[in-house]
Image 1 (cartoon, rainbow, N blue to C red):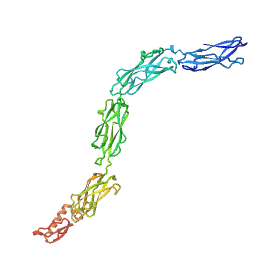
Image 2: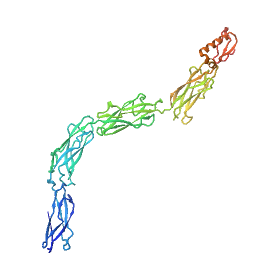
Image 3: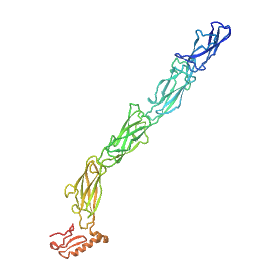
Image 4: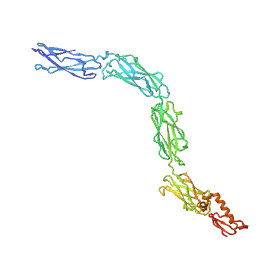
Length: 517
């Protein structure tokens, strides 16, 4: 284009009129960039002439924009003043309508795992020939080959393209299903679906891409907040974790089979879960699901071990057990329990004390009954229950009470040993706990042993043994019986040598005392 500078009258010498160029802006037109045009720094007017011209050359660019700028007078010589008009606005119209571009399609990969997105690229042979601040839409079709509804987003959609771009990236999302199969689909640029006014666009080759979806089952694992479940205490959180979102629509639901097993645990020991098979509901799209397990109070004092596991044989289609899929748990029993220990004493030792203990302080009143039972020792002859907790004087039964915060966790039951001079060997009796309330019995039977310390053991047994000693005392006793009315003590045993009832000798008294007449 030509720009003309005009003087109001001719000068006697040549003069150069300087120019300056100012970028301008209005709707759909923008300031030019370097290289958009070439222009002279000024216009030369010869002596005696009143006009001069300069040429502004415009260049092709790739942006598709119209450019707008102003040509104005620069700093004039002293003998020239600016008149009107002193500037002119010039618009360079872009020829994008006539500049064609070919579009092709490619993918960053052609094999993706279920649930992943695949990235695709539209490439243009030259920049999109339109103003870069304007946009066009390229139609793209996604179609299945052997995939099913829900495997991908299947659509004919518009991909937004800005003017001046050489590439545009977009993605297609795949989704998990439950069939276990690989699926294929295509993404293409349908030439017959493009807007009719986009005469500049040509669909090149390749214009379609085939993508394969690799089926990958969702792994299910199991974890626990902790592995100890307090009996009657707080519940423990357990969590089903999924390696990917559950492959269902968000409003759909499935059930995960959870099995509880163990040789220690019994039906009714747990809260929220049952012994055997349980079902935990999960919804599509979830990555985890929490559930609870708790323990009820029972009547024993034992810890119970059990296993919570994902039942792999019953998992829904599309889900597979991962690792870990089971957790070993234990119910920690906190019921107070009672124990009693064996006691022994010598025959001349006085008293025996049976110590009945609770393993922890009670939080409620604990009552337990007890009794003593003969084994080889006889109540009233060899020992006697003399504790203040006995039911009555001479009784073999009683009961103990443990109060919260009072008296500690131990009670003592006193049994008195009755000394005699009869050599009868060690003797035993039982101390038995029964009928507890507020606690359970863990060790409820103890043995009381009375150690014999009569003379026969020290004199005879150490030298001859019990069999020989007994034979000797029997022989000597028979000799003494030949003297009627005589009395004697042999090896600590009183012997009555009288012969009542026609001369028969009286036997040894069980307590070592002489019979009176």
